[in-house]
Length: 196
Image (cartoon, rainbow, N blue to C red; front, side, top):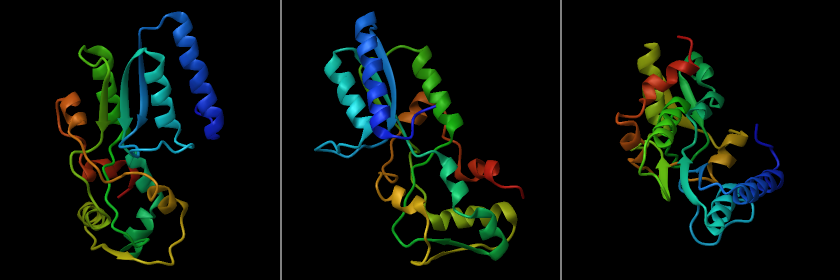
């Protein structure tokens, strides 16, 4: 379990890289975060700082940059949306490249069990993004009840602040190439979070 304090996490990652060097480890696989910011590395960006540390170590690497887990939809009030007929979100041009943990596990398993991944960086995201209006449409399909999307600036939830700080919109075909199949659809992904 990762520590919630980024400074502690970075110290832990530093210790692991130093231990790997000392032990003569030839290849490190690191699970990072998709599409990190370019340019100056923010001092609190644990994943980018860890990537840089691994690069400087000289150890061969593979970086698996995971998209935002599809799990995040579970805090959006889906059951309330089904009951009221409205999916209400904070205003913004939100787009999501989210994927399921199961798909990420499969892509990772492929990297671990096949060759050709040395010193590669994979952006493990969906190949196309979706938005809240599409989410409302899929909820309507799954429930047989009309659900519309509406934005409301009075909505207060920590998730929107978090989403605003990361790239949830950029897409890549890396994941589908690794898996050899399409990513799990939004509709199929939602089954886990709904009891309909």
